[in-house]
Amino acid sequence: MSFDHSLENEAAPLEDGIADARDGDESTRDCDSRASSQTSTQMSTDLYDHEPFETFAYKIHRLLTIIFPGDLPIQVERMSGGSYNRVVCGVLGYGQDPPRRVVVRIPRFTYRSPVDEVAILRFLRSNTAIPVPSVLHFHMSSANIISDPYTILEYLPGTCLGDVYDDLPAHIKKSIVRSLVCLLEQLGGR
Image (cartoon, rainbow, N blue to C red; front, top):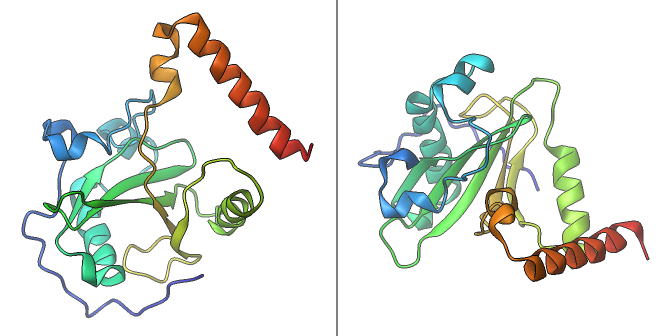
């Protein structure tokens, strides 16, 4: 599924549609991963030569407003990403209980395309019991409002295992290892 619209003339009022997850607002904490990656900080903006979040968030807000016009108002929040993707959270229906969250993933490098990741996620979702987010939209080229390829995924709430593992009791750690073995067996086709 590809999303392709000409968005140059589209405008959406932001009202308070941009947020910083470091503000401490309760609504932004769910999107702020506590993982060691710091992709939404000034350091990563400099490291990857990205547009600062404050200006990039306006583009993401416009993109989400056009893709999800029935889910207004929309809030855009920082998230930590990884080495290969810049990641931003969109809160659709902001202020409603509960709001719907989506994750916008933008490849950091021009040679990366979301097409392989989309295919892998769809395969895993269809052929395994591994919990992966559904792909809501993707665009493979830079011909869009954010000038980059992107993927919009369903937000899956949770806690980063690396953030809590050391503090877990031994019986929980054993259970996690057993779950990982089951997941690996599914990937191995057993």
